[in-house]
Image (tube, rainbow, N blue to C red; front, side, top):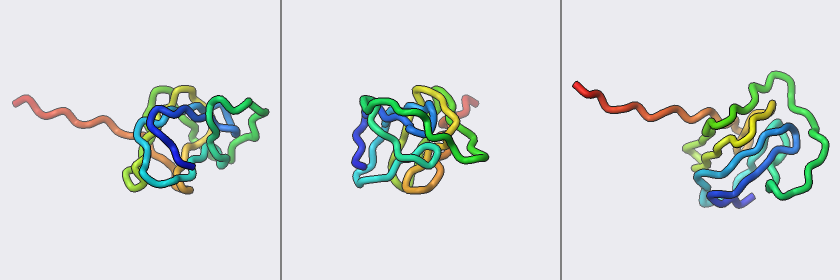
Length: 101
């Protein structure tokens, strides 16, 4: 899937919704709970469920992968884990502030 910054996507496996903050140059496979993310406008179906042991997504957190160049902002929390090309996306940490000695 070729994604663009500002694009809104949702999971078909759970309630997760995300917005693309930074889009990669190449096509990527974005998934949540093992199922591909779809555009937000796609009609909702019954959630398919998520695999056992998923940590889920947290509202307002950014999930990023420096290797692929994708960054997603969670706009609605859910039970599935976000992944890009089969690799789980970790929560992006805050930038450390410079010391004020």
